[in-house]
Amino acid sequence: MIRHVALFRFADSVTDETITHIDDTLATLPGLIPDIISFRFGRDIGLTDGAWDYAVTTDLASADDYHTYATHPDHVAIVRNIVGPHVTESARVQFEVG
Image 1 (cartoon, rainbow, N blue to C red):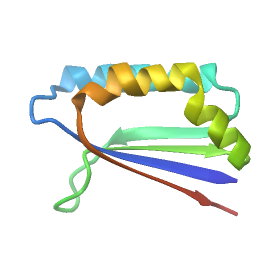
Image 2 (image 1 turned 90 degrees about the horizontal axis):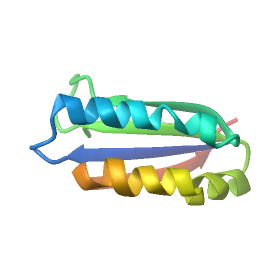
Image 3 (image 1 turned 60 degrees about the vertical axis):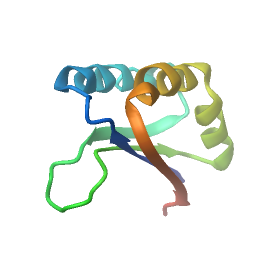
Image 4 (image 1 turned 135 degrees about the vertical axis):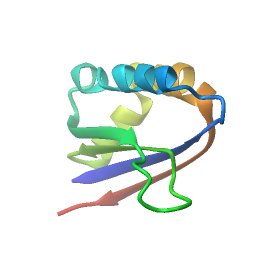
């Protein structure tokens, strides 16, 4: 199984309402992309200094499924139009889980 992790730092101007909209929109992805096995996301809860603001984890069966997810038009549109405009920095990693 492949786990994809995306981390985001938001612009200082991001409001709680904006993050709620991001949450609500991201919640639609598992229904749109059947390759998703598990999908979790949320804000940092502030336990350590310097942490990223927001994380998304997605589990997929294979590298091919990851590529399907990463290039899926609904995923691309959400990243580009809903999340991206509020992000100042991002990081991604994909790794195998047993």
